[in-house]
Amino acid sequence: MNFIEKQTLTIIFFFIFSISFSQTAMSDSLRGEFTYLLQYKPNTLNRDYFIKELYSLQITDKRSFFSSENKLKFDSAFSAAYNKKNNVIDLSGIPASRSNFLIIQTNENSEFYESVGMTLLSYNSPIIRNWKLINETKVINSISCKKAEVNYKGRDWTAWYSTEIPFPYGPYKFSGLPGLIVKITDKTGDYDYELVKAVSSSKLKGQTITVKKARYQGAKLVTQKELSEARANFRANAKRELESMGTVFSQDQSRPKISEAEKKGHNPIELE
Image 1 (cartoon, rainbow, N blue to C red):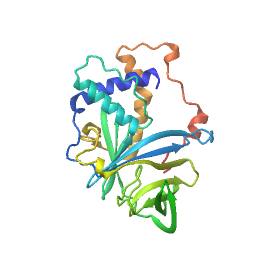
Image 2: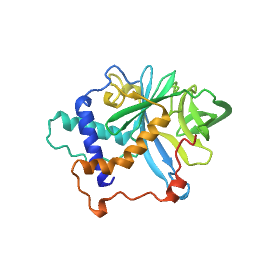
Image 3: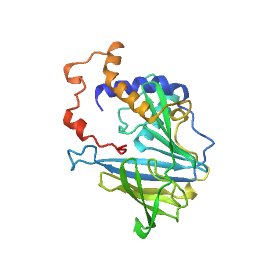
Image 4: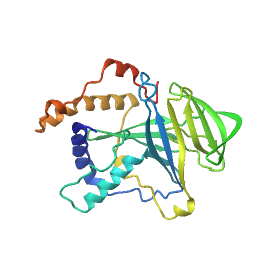
């Protein structure tokens, strides 16, 4: 994370989360907690370059919460430091996450949340219902799984789900199968989520989700396109906004421009 991003995050988190960051969704008792490893290729022009990141899927009676584990660690550390009334909050030792979004899934829809600047935005997507169930089984990490396929947002996906784990959820926006998604990969191999850890139900008794309410309460509802445009505009203006607050940057601290080749090779998870 470069200097601009660090300073921007500090400002955003201080003003937004100092108000409500100590709050947790106490009514959401945990019924399942799972960790997925995402491996993906961020740019099609460099097929050998992979990025890896761990994500947490926390399931309650009526919904699930999906977030980067590093983002949850950051939130927890900030909350702990703030509650101690520290004048200086040092988060330099917390691993940076490439994904600051939160996805909440219910039986009705998928809700995407992301803070852009000082505004929390969200948009809704319908639950995926056009799964094609395949008469094929496979054992993944000692879990018996069944196969399903779907075309979602321009990519063809193959999912392996387990009816032995009766939760209709999975990583990202994937849900709607008769069991937890254990592994899901797109046809090109550019994106792959795989379950790598599960917390036994006996250890979850009395626990609630660890997602802070500040990440999803009071969000402004927009379209997916509007959120993407707001994100792009904020990133483009971040340096200018910090300079208006008195921050002085040296030549070396200027944000490098993205080359045309990098733009052409950009490889998002959703192509449509």
